[in-house]
View 1 (cartoon, one colour):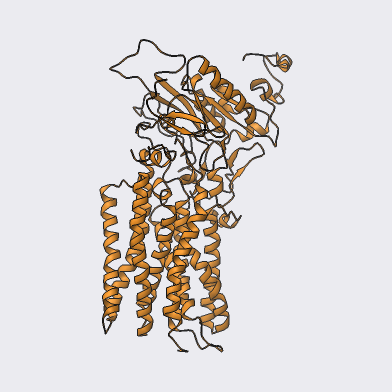
View 2 (cartoon, one colour):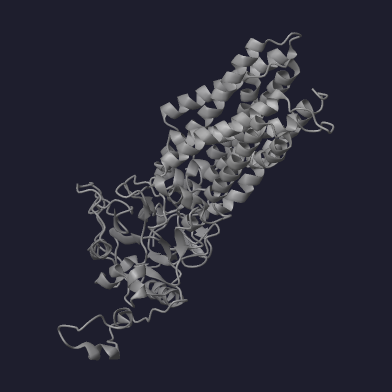
Length: 320
Length: 301
């Protein structure tokens, strides 16, 4: 035995990894998903966050309650819209789509996908009921159905990030907690922006813009945290396209933050500026998800990323 | 090692009337009974790279060909485990062309070969991620995909820390080694281990295999191979990060990465709950801000 340097796992002493790979063959397989899943993640997040905001806008009002404000009514439309557009996208991404209903065959708490399937089913059903009741004039039923829709909506906005983190894909696994936080914040920013786009009542769209501003700023801050965690684990490598796409996403985050802030500080906030900022915020949310999907597939194809992440702690081999 | 089972004398004829009851007793020295744990011990120091395991697996499981061209990777044209390749022999050449040794320790030295396979992890990340219940743990403590349930969502694919399970483009379902579930039910040992001419692949009850493997490591060390170690037995590399043991485990003589194995893989499902909690907390934080901004100011509009 002529090992120069060793690392210890359990009771076993094995040679240090010197950066060698097996003919560059990736030791893990990339996610077999594309833009369809990334777009579903985005749509589910917008719809979920919108339902939460819609409920909050209708909350704390004296009973007997008057008609729900327009923002709440539009949130119900957004919830149903997110499911109507998003669900067909993920079903289309299944490799055997006609068996989509098997997703509700069991409940598996260790599976992000199982949790997500039930969340989507609950969110779709309650959002649909709330909208149907709203359109047929059953105000109380609409309100009663809006509560489960908002609870499931919070799950819809965040579970996808946790689902991605709970894989062996190095880029996702290296920053699973912050990734889920980013997805939640990104959903909130896009949901508030989407509601703000159709809002005429000044104080309401200004409040929504502030919510979007807060969520976007926190999301931008966390994007640096995610980057740091990936760097620490050695899974931050990126091809040129990914780097450019990530830079574009950063610009798309910072621009609406600046515009929202300018509008908020101004004495007469401009609805046009709000519309522009909200559109950018929505685009930022979508691009974030698409970038994560592309970057994850690329990182799974780099054997070094997987080997670095799977080094025993304290072996000094994480960053080679 | 070579001793003939007494029952072998009952089957002296050239042509058998039917299948042999509990055939595995004769071929692997173990009776297969539901409720016990079975697996593989793959001793890479005995592998000669003949690929009989790959062929036996393809034949028994009727698996289609993956790619029929040369890879340029030593003698390895299979490249990796896939939906249609459930055994894969790796060929890692350790020869330094500028410094040829004139003396070598016993067993594989300049050419490391290993027959890779699904590890049938305990707990199994693919199974824990499967939303349809298509992946399940059998009565033999192995992990199998039920083909009539899988809808090809593909979440098991990135969940596996070893890149084993994959989707087939031919039928849109996930596939991997079943540890010959059908054969075990019929009292036969898996096709690959039965075909292995050197007993590099050994099938048996897990606890018995662990004992056998420990003895083999000791034996190799006595022979001067101090670099021999187990990968995937409890408390060894491979059985890390929440994965307690691999029911298909290995004896290696170089870094796991040389065999394309991660040194300290982790159970992906362990990241789910903390991530979900962090995500919901961040979401709730902004929702609280929204509650103040949206809920407070309006009065019965």
